[in-house]
Amino acid sequence: MARTLVVAADVWRSFQRERGVLAAVQGCSFKIKAGETIAIVGPSGCGKTTLLNLIAGLGVPSSGRVEWPGLGSPDTLRPERIGVVFQSANLIPGLTALENVELPILLANGSEAEARALAALATFSVEALAGKLPEQLSGGQAERIAVARAIVTNPELIVADEPTGQLDQAGAALLVDRLLAWGQQTGSAIIIATHDERVAAKMNRIWRMRHGKFESMDERLKCTGTG
Ligand SMILES: Nc1ncnc2c1ncn2[C@@H]1O[C@H](COP(=O)(O)OP(=O)(O)OP(=O)(O)O)[C@@H](O)[C@H]1O
Ligand SMILES: [Mg+2]
Image 1: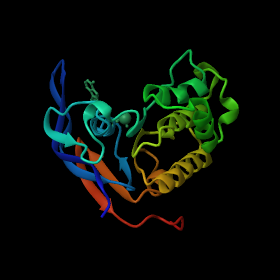
Image 2: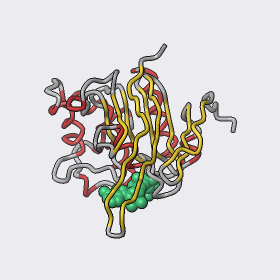
Image 3: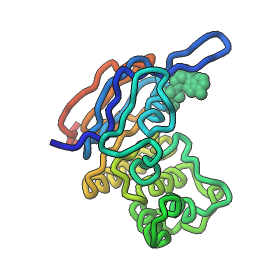
């Protein structure tokens, strides 16, 4: 049996807003196991980013609980155990692409940061952009570098929020294929929020969200590319 990395039990996340409380995530329960690949899909505002933040330990549930039995304590989750790709890439301005990708290794007191960062960039064919600053990159280039930054410490879970939103169809497919191939090699689990059904179809499971709840959580065999 694959190791359970994340357990969420009846998780809610509410935000206080001017006109009252908005419950962005409403009673979600699930497990994420080693090696699983999951897509979260659903309309804008349905709670995908909020849920991913809870999974990555970047947000605290208003009620219910999220635990990481296979990953350790919330303090040590990132960047070693969970790699995060933020919705708008979020590269740090003023640092080159290479320095952005080296950063998780340095934060984790790892060695050979430059060589490992270059290898991660090469995984997504963006090693030639190593010396560029974020402002010199296209949106799609920045996304590929942000994914390289998330995998560079070989985390056991990747949490990626619309990592292909700025890429064209072919670029999106290539990025996800490379990420999935990396995950197969390392045995890591990958969870992606996406509006792209073609991207979602590459994952083993699709969780459909609406108004903060799961509509369905398909368990299915991986699509082999035939439809
Ligand atoms: N920090 C916050 N404060 C107040 N409201 C918030 C906050 N973060 C999210 N929300 C609200 O929670 C709801 C869910 O937002 P969320 O960003 O999770 O949606 P999403 O599914 O990721 O949307 P998109 O596809 O546009 O990225 C939205 O109504 C949003 O306005
Ligand atoms: Mg979002």
